[in-house]
Length: 117
Length: 113
Image (cartoon, rainbow over all chains, first blue to last red; front, side, top):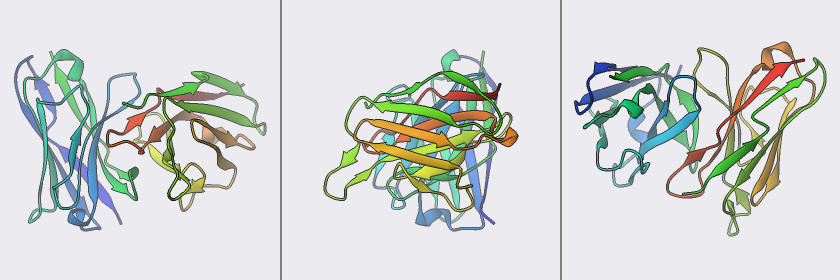
């Protein structure tokens, strides 16, 4: 059974950093493109970043470019999102998701809440 | 970036009736070499992560009821729920994966009339 579990969320002040983790079970995370998608309270979905299976192809939304870094640990079957210089507008539930084909997300975690205040 | 615009923002439909959600992309998302539209649809119920419904604009994900269908091409797309059930109350999102930066529509809330 495919499962994704995010961790690392919390309350931080503007300008501080946070690192989100996502652990996969039921499949080899390293064989897939993986992504982060966030959802501000009461708002819609916003794609944040994705990383290819080889880590050679990485993209970011303009809103986080230069502040966030996506990475993966092949040995730990894990995905990460390093978030620096956090702003109030980064407050959101951050989802880790598996991408299939050319970019649709078929499996999602329950999310990690990041509050910047 | 490709901007995805959904309409309406919300709609109320009677049980058993058809619900129709539109999604427009600011650029063409039909790839001519394979004739595929790079569009997915998701359903999100309160307190839950999104669930994939359709990809390639009209291919149903495994386990998704056949009352959900997708149509359209190029820049105009539609998600239809043929006979609305109580469990279909949710917010629905479209997403393009044509460009290297993926984007979602703003969402459409479906309620029971």
